[in-house]
Image (tube, rainbow over all chains, first blue to last red; front, top):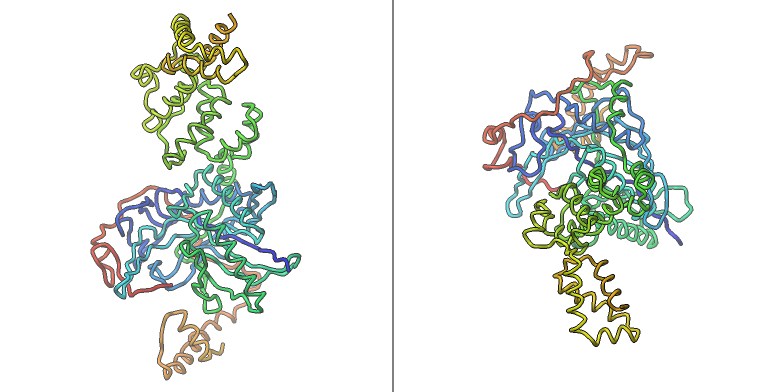
Length: 477
Length: 95
């Protein structure tokens, strides 16, 4: 029998606000345990939470960008559960009237499948604290720095059929949220976390199978592997005549397998009720219009514009718009007058090479657009050859060093002196009569050797085109 | 509304409470009495009345996104049932 995998996602995204959702403690990552806490976020009796206006703004921005409907009368609810990561014994979340419903995310997979992923809802809630279980004592240490950090949870319909579609969606979602500036979406720091709901069914069946929920997926790679593992596990169970149990399973990246955490059949009853401490929200059309005006240009729009306005090939436009930081960098260089295709080549080549070599994210690099623009203009003016320019680029990349200072300090300016070039050619020709003989008898390779020798003679600083021309002229004379 | 001993068991699991077997019948009776009080409200005709999620006629109460100093940790941890110099301590709870 052929089986079909059906997947829905619940993605938690930490919002890039300065303060927590219901109190004025900082959301900064890192920080010694329990130093970003106050009576509100540690659930002391008698405290009153007050909503951070930026949380609403970011959630609405995300909702509009995901093409969702904004709930005009909106409120918070209490989700009750006893676990020490939440000192109040409940999480303030939204069940009955989530801020956003019915969104749509168009995706395109690497193999070219295009489809729309439906967003069931997007709601606001608070993050929980971090627990460290003592391996020796019967004790758990609680750090509440993350407790109360604002999250949006984005829930899709079960519209995915493959891991490839899931990854395409997450990449799209991450890029969208980064463009909006509502989250940095760093999986390694937990600011983007994804739970995967997965079931299998005979291909063609309209009925959904029993699903499991997988947690602890900390990278796109882990998500893809967990989906492959869990689909296989469920198919094997059914083919052996057993049944899939609805439960939460934990992905173990080291063991490459999922393990049951808790059974849903056993009391997952959150006893939701309206949060009495937070007055309801009324979202006016005026507010929505205001937020809509503040939405930045999104990746899809830039993709079209880069091809039309800058004449870039589709591939370049896709690479540059994939990350907001790269798109911003590109536009800044173009605004400084650099040739757009040259800028694109530099970004996709040496710049991305440096980022991956240094393990840096584009938005964290020191290099300024002005530095690259200067390099490009020096190459264009024939004052620096391309290979030397790449070396200069690598040297100034880390600290955004001054290009001209570096070039003069290292004597790298291109030699455009025709007499020096002629002298070098002369010297190389008289030292390599065999190569000239070889070239004349048809060995094109010998030409390259001669170019290399002349370049070496001029310490790599010559203009390659001028060297080529000078050697051709000399051979033909 | 009839509260059975099974319902008492279920609510006990949710509340992480472990009543003694002999207490269950009494708890059921007491809970039933408490819940029956809600019947007073059920006597009202609420057809056509908008559900209310908050008792005061206020909305959109928000604050600007400006950080303020947190509570010094030493003071914060004074409220802990048990603590070490950095953290709240609780009995080991592994989900």
